[in-house]
Length: 273
Image (tube, rainbow, N blue to C red):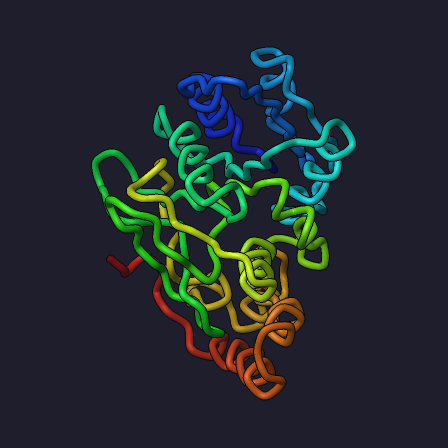
């Protein structure tokens, strides 16, 4: 996990993680990167869950590099059979881990298992999970009864067996916030591995506003360009670095150029369904 100033969400996520249905012959260790929290998140976590291993960051890691640091620390501690990625704004359903381990055993622990999420308990719209291939990945809904292949995925709930990370490595710290989860999915697919969407849904996570920061008309055009290149934007340099690994040079350049054009056409981010 990587956390930054979302104490209540982080604690809620951990509450549901630690009350998961038990799985025979498995134990769980939690590694959490505190990326410069100033709201008391790590202190509250340690007080309530003293076994959580907290890795300190200075606020410059963001999600992807925070996950990289947590994964490195985990590998230094043990030779884990599985690594589970979990976003701290995700609420696990009580039997999620048990079910994901079951589905992993069905495919002989040689594939990544992705858990899809719904927006919340009331609004049961799909929010995060699998993605299609192509330079513009589109959301891929899970089947309700059987495993479903996906080319890549969001990193909200992802179970990665040892056989996978031994073959393709861990998350790439080239990227700061975005792209690392999608790149890992592409990397697995490129190396002949299969990413599977587990049947049904495994948690709740509110979908982010679909209008990116760099397209919101509440900001000036200069601010929008700055946001585009920020870690929380859709940095064209990092986008190009990822895309050129899996797509043609022409496609990669066109995609990065298009991002700049998108800045010019702002959208009211308060007006969407």
